[in-house]
Length: 192
Image 1 (cartoon, rainbow, N blue to C red):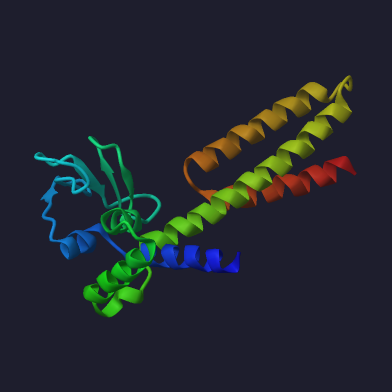
Image 2: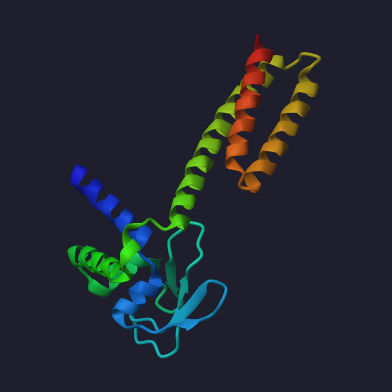
């Protein structure tokens, strides 16, 4: 199990450093820049005469990705290499070779990748706290059912959910986490 995990970690590390321009250059594939952080190439995976493979370089994930609109294949840099080599061990060697070819700072992780990972951690933490808050509020509201303050409490909870939705929609996950923590503390005080 540990061996599989280390292979996955190696692939993630390689993917965080690779970019599609370097991969295409390695294979001698020319591309047509489409602007807006994407470009097109003739798909090497099927008999293609007009560029049908689109490369996306500004993804939220921090990884370059690709999609062929004809053969319907897609993936990231490492998946492209795997599809070209048809051999996993050779794919890892090829990815490492491409990184060496990039030179100097090839071992520096792409800042987009780091930022995406941080956002993903914060998003997950905000979601878990949001769930915890939801359970506590549901229990609290159920305990108030039939009480004269029930409707006012329900309105207050709805307002809190609206505020929380606004924070998560704006991707201000740390603010959402702080907001939920504050509301959980207030809920604890109200239940005493």
